[in-house]
Length: 186
Image 1: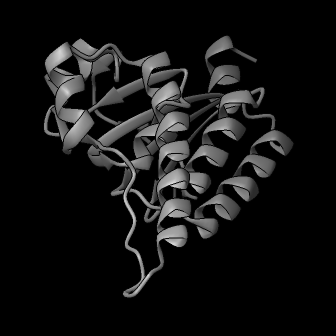
Image 2: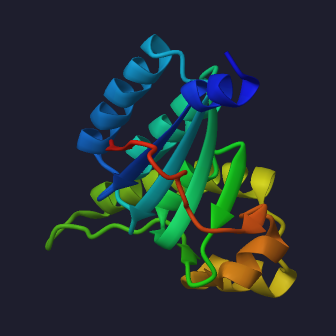
């Protein structure tokens, strides 16, 4: 068996889209289980997501980051909010020239008439979520002081060039499975 044929059998191509939530966590768990059973060593994943729940995104990040599979993530359109944390679990990361990223601090809506103690609990939770996601962001990405200032108070948008300069991606490169390669949806 040729080395090229062997490599193709240990690599697979996937798409992952939608909200980052418990359903996505379940889908990722199931797909990774199949990958390990199939002997996949490198998983190429095109991610398209505008974000979702912080804890679900952190779970996916920690799970994928520590599996014995090399995840290669691609952004072909938009990866935003907690989906950026999921994206950073890739050992290699790429984006299309027209892709964008958006990172921001956590936010929540309190119920009308919430009491001060309930509001305090919400604020504590938001601060904890921000600390967890920012630790991961700072571990992978180098933003300018101006970008960190924007991130502190507003949505920070990065185009493909900005993402490459910051280290969010290794290269501007499209998700392009080889001809004849099966692409599975997670």
